[in-house]
Amino acid sequence: MPLFYVEITGEDRLAIESRIQNNQLIALRIKRQIYQRTDRVITDIKGFEPFNVGEWLTLVKYDNWKGEAIKDALRPTPASFSPLGIHVKENWGFLDPFALLDKVFEDLKVNWEKDYINYGTLPQLPPTRVEHFQRNLVFVSDLVRYVIHDRSILEKLAQDQAIMPLPQPGQDDWLIEENATAMNRIEKIALRGRLSIEMLGTRQIITHRPRAEGEDTMKATP
Figure 1 (tube, rainbow, N blue to C red):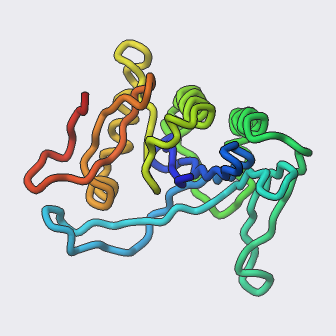
Figure 2 (cartoon, rainbow, N blue to C red):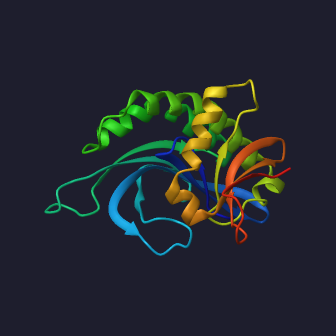
């Protein structure tokens, strides 16, 4: 099944990969990642001025890929010890993919700031990002559960597609604006394509689609 991404803020996302066997979902791998800007500049995308890009860094990995459910929190260490860093692992026992998913969101709700701080070397979280993460996690949790629990919905997602929940007007207008802004950053539009507001089954999302020549960078799709 495709690897897809669900963004929580402009700098926080979940990378979600599923394993299907005998037409049954048997395992999940979920990486909690953050966006780190780099000095790399892209200069050759038509229609865009030069812009900086970054990379997505994995802070925590959750999976039951090998049977037992594991939370693997990464910690960087000096290069003289290991370029891969060290791992702080929690064994959650044998969980099916759906129980693992519930456990992941319980853990994110309680520990997402602590895991960020414990990673070390990262800048302090600004208050707006904290609020964005906390308010959007409710919608992200609902969206991911909806996708994973319904194979027909999961199969609608393309490989490496990035999506973000978009509340309906009146649900959380501040969050609607923050989510649209997060997905509308120059590097995302240039590398992924135009923004598109769509219905994924019964859930409204904001995502990116390849642009036709001359097409606007943002478009609502019925």
